[in-house]
Structures are given as C-alpha cells and as structure tokens.
Image: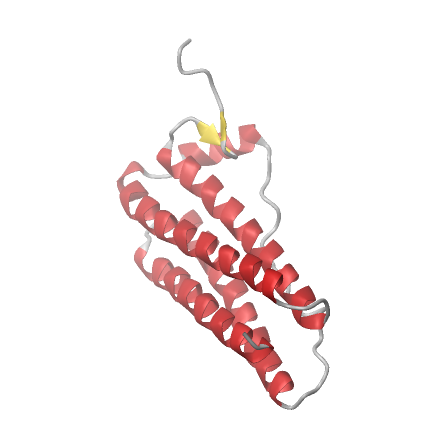
Length: 169
C-alpha cells in the first residue's frame, strides 16, 4: 500500500466512527452521553481534516507535518469514587440505547486501532509511520474511554477492565 492508499483507507475509518458519534449525539437523551459523543465526534472530525489535508500534501510531494494529529480527549480519570458518583446520575431508561451505541463505538474504535497498527507495520520509518503511530495512540485512548463508559453503563462490576468488587462477598 502506498502512503496515499493508507491515508485514504484511514479516512474511511475516521469518517465511519465520526458519523456514528454524530448520530449518537442526535439519538441519546442523556446530557453526559451527548457530551462524550460530541467530544469524540469533534476529535474524529479533526482526524478527518488532518487526513484530507495530508492527502493533498502527499499528492503534491511535499513534506508532511507530523505535529498536527492530536486529541482533545483526556486520558480517562482513574478516580473510582468520581466514576461511581457519575454512574448514579445515569437514568436507567437510557442505558439500553447508550450501551448499544457504546458497543458499536467500541467495535469501530478497535477496528480502526487494528488498521493503524497494521499500517504501521507496513510502512517505512519516516513521517508517514510517525503519523500512523500518533493516530494509533489516539485510537487506543478512544478504545479505553469507550470501554470505561461501556463498563460504567453496563454496571457489570468492571472498571478499566478490572473487577471492581468481589462479587462473592
């Protein structure tokens, strides 16, 4: 795959996940869920903009700017008390829709992460690989954030992929 083909494929992934988040903003009644999906949609739109810009640069045989791809999504807070407090505020009647969207988002984020991981392996060291590595890190962060929110909405005893409490006590 050429760099242009990799970026074109990445653009398909980024648009797909962006559109899912935009749809979720329209369909989820919970303000907290809307805020999360809006932030993720904006983040993904930034990736779309960067990739479209980069494709133009590649086509003109100019040098890529590896500093641009980034994320506004903070690393997930690991304050369990804060998360438990937030969990109490989620209305039970919206959890079905929220979980459905989060499951879909998690699948797409994981698929996108795998794409970037594979693309990194297939490219030579240089600016294109550096950009792909940045995107991979960002998508891994998205996977973690969505997984935390899904655990949170599912109330399954898991936080950050670890059992929060011993269910046998």
